[in-house]
Image 1 (tube, rainbow, N blue to C red):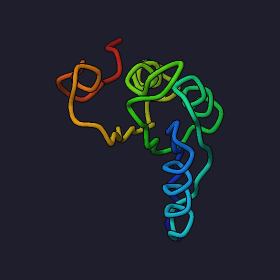
Image 2 (image 1 turned 90 degrees about the vertical axis):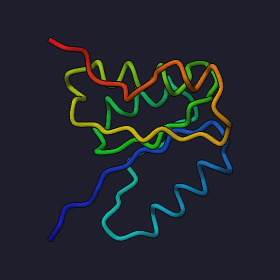
Image 3 (image 1 turned 180 degrees about the vertical axis):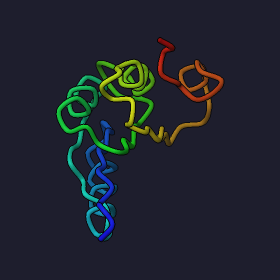
Image 4 (image 1 turned 90 degrees about the horizontal axis):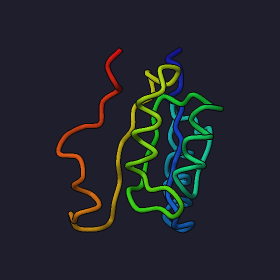
Amino acid sequence: MIPSIRVVVADDQTLVRSGFLALLRSEDGIDVVGEAANGYEAVRVAKLERPDVILMDIRMPEMDGLEATQLITADPALESVRIVVLTTFDLDATSTRHSGPVLPASS
């Protein structure tokens, strides 16, 4: 048996987050292990659940998805976590702060 992919969904819009959760929960092989409404919650859930993948919205209150992504990828204990960045907005200054993938800091 193939192990399930453990997923966290981070989006501040309840309706969007609920939609992703419903879609993911309906799929075999995907185990939703957490959700977050802002970047702080995303980092906390990542540390607690150690998911395989986080679906991360860019624009969220309190801490945006890019800052949360930086904190998660900089944590050696979370080096196996992969982050898929989501947005419903056109590219702008917020979403283009990084010209490439956010990679873990070198040791």
